[in-house]
Amino acid sequence: MVVLAMLLVATVLIIGGLSLLNQHQRSAALDMDRTRALEAAQALLSDAEQDIKTPGARSSSSVFFPLRLREFEDVRQRAWLDGVGCREGICVPQTMDSWPASHWRKLSTNDAFWRTGASYGSHTGASSPSDHAALARGRYWVEVLINDESTTQGAPAVVPDAITPFVYRVTAVAPGQRDGTLVVLQTLIVPVPES
Image (cartoon, rainbow, N blue to C red; front, top):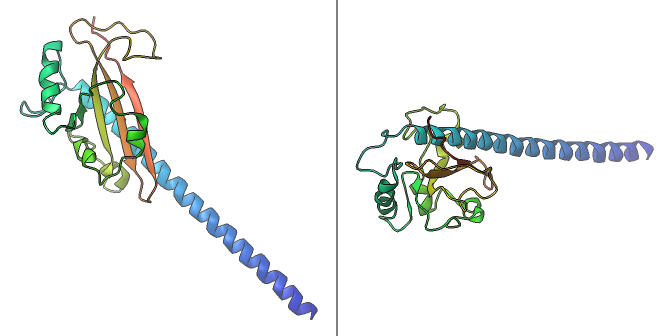
């Protein structure tokens, strides 16, 4: 009887240990998936910044980053051709709050808006590692904003360049391999006028 009781206790301990090990493995897999998606989102932000810094890399028939204020309206019209405000990763929002944080957090690769984003290297020529699925599936959007006090809320005071008065709000979204893993990073890029 004592042996049976000891076997029962040992079995319960083994099952508990296996359950704990299984939870730990699941947690580690989720952490790894989120880390890979975070790396992808960071790489997408860098690619978007390179895209902004390389004017003329986009064809004249597509949407482009305006270099002068007079080009802004042309870009706005092209971005709104489909009624979305974004095309090939360049967006011209109606207002600063056109796409709030909740919009980006709810975004899915099945949404029509997803197709308006730019993929890694699509405009810079950068190639992504073949084993990085989150990077291959991720997208970025660059909102072209006119630099004024409302645009740079909370940011240090930046004097806009009179010729190219733009600020870019870049949003990178990278889905993980597992359902529910989605990393959204956002940054504000204020070009510094060349002296």
